[in-house]
Image 1 (spheres, rainbow, N blue to C red):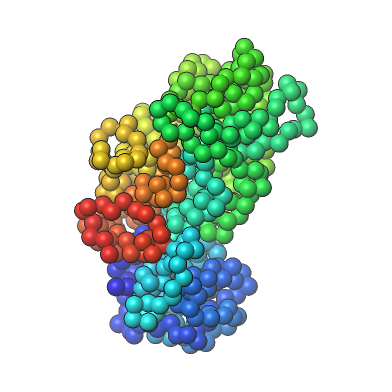
Image 2: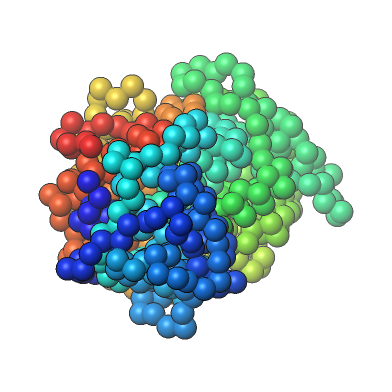
Amino acid sequence: MNTTDNLIPRPVQVAPSDGQAFTLAPTARIAASQAAVRVAEQLAVLLRRGTGFALPIVETANAGDITLDLVETLDGGPEAYRLTVTNAGARLAATTPAGLFNAVQTLRQLLPPAVEHSLTGADDSNTSTDGTWVIPAVEIRDAPRFAYRGLMLDVARNFFTVEEVKQQIDVMSQLKLNALHLHLTDDQAWRIEIHAPKENPSGLDYGNLTAIGGAVNHPGIGLTPGHSGFYTQQDFREIQAYAAARNVLIVPEIDLPGHVNAALAAIPQLNPDGMAKPMNATGEVGYSTLDAALPATYEFVREVLGQLAAITDGPYLHIGGDEAHVTGHDNYVTMVREFARIGAETGKTVVGWNEYASVELPQGSVVQYWFGDFSPVVQQAESGSSKVIMSPAANTYLDQKYDSSSPIGLEWVDGGPFTWSEYYHWNPAQGGLQDDKVLGVEGPLWTETVRNNQQAYWLLYPRAISLAEVGWSPQDARDVGDFRRRLGALGERLTRQGVTFQAAPDIQWS
Ligand code: TNX
């Protein structure tokens, strides 16, 4: 059943009207001004595939058409939108294409689930169960609670091809998730091409980062080693452009100064003894570090962050900072302070895991909280005008097993189980932080146990749907019981899209 009650994330204001529903006819068109044509085209692709109708894009609307309008003002910031459906048509209005994109995702959920098709291109049948495409009459006004609503893909432990990342973006963006953090480097692998620089005082072989660090396909002990591969800078731009067209911001991460074994294996000069480390595909953490005393360390970081900043359109550059267990406190402070400065010098806003909050950071740096002591985070937020991305492990970690019977996933977070409901039932504004200090929320998917998109989907969904609503909907508008019902109704749409989700036993899936 398509109704105005099933929307996820729940909009700020939904006013069903007594008027007649709108039936999309085979003669319908999509009307859009020049600046709205790109989003209109995306809606057209979805609806043509779903309905088999021609749905041409035109400049001015007739009765019976869908209209996309860019307007001057609308409360709620750049992502806000208004969606009005009457028997004469549907009208989507926003101040930006991002807002229009959000409106399209809502419209999509007002159509029967049969409008959805495999995102991998497998099935192309196009009939609704009763052959009609009815959209209930309604007026929706909506805007996000937080500007940043993200997922993280660990592409180091498991490489995801450009095509796989694009599919992840297709799935997440329908839930109005708007940031994808790519964990590009770690002990096991280095997944982003770094060109040989013009100036290279220490003669570092940057090509080896991906030649050695991207070639991870050897058998390891313990956890299954991930796939080989890396993104060329062109691949990265391609992912980024694809994401931008779907209102998704790419946040690239180079994890420093720990989690660097792949770099130490590729570039001997990064080691104090000048000897390259062996590659290590195990799931061990916290054993590798850059050396604070080596000039090559800073030369390397400057080059890598500089090249990455140059290809990154978004404002953020993530420099890691987590689990540097063998770095030593003073060395950690020295390096992270300098790396954050280098990052900020590229013109980007630096982001780091919460361990780095104890270091003096450039004003406005972003802290991503995942685990441990919250007080340095609050302190940074207050003294350094930093904003916080909330990823508390027990409420957002998408790598955790749902419970001990899960065939994949890790089990290191205390407590549990870790189901859609724990990931729904929390408030990102906590520990003294108000909404204005919270940039948003992010669910990380570490991939030591993940080897393809379907496995990733299974760990992500439905928990990432909880996260999407936590990030979007007002706290006082959220209700676990109501969400449970709406989540069940979303099941059929995901199934039609070919997304394998965890069929949580406490949900009545459609
Ligand atoms: C800790 S969470 C990590 C990751 C691992 C994860 C699971 C975080 C910031 N760092 O490097 O993948 O544990 O082993």
